[in-house]
Image (tube, rainbow, N blue to C red; front, side, top):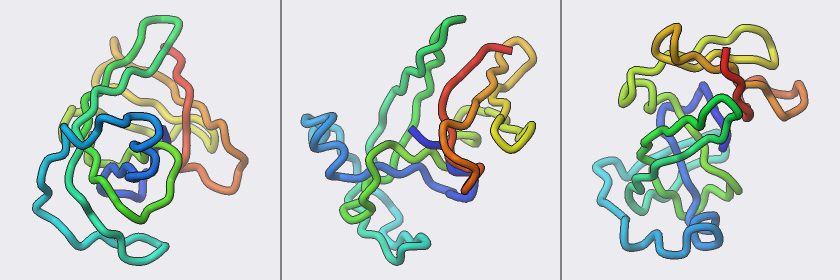
Length: 131
């Protein structure tokens, strides 16, 4: 899963779900918005998928309930976490430095997220440590 701070909407690709969650069709919900655009162009929305994502952590796993816009032509091999999860879950995210962000809604529930990518972008991150 990648966090992309410039994306308003969390996104999943149909091909990714076909491989990793083959029963996804039973959970497909309609979407109100059909016109999605990104830096690669216009995207074809098929609907909405609801997922409970569990992020493993040595200090206790983090569960995040999310809605993903399902795209037919986005070609990503992971869930793309946009900023809409903040509104849904009341979560704050703060950039601490170029390779680290803080995720949480209170001092007791803060986690550091470290980048697993090269410096070409600071938006794609993974890996949690309890602060």
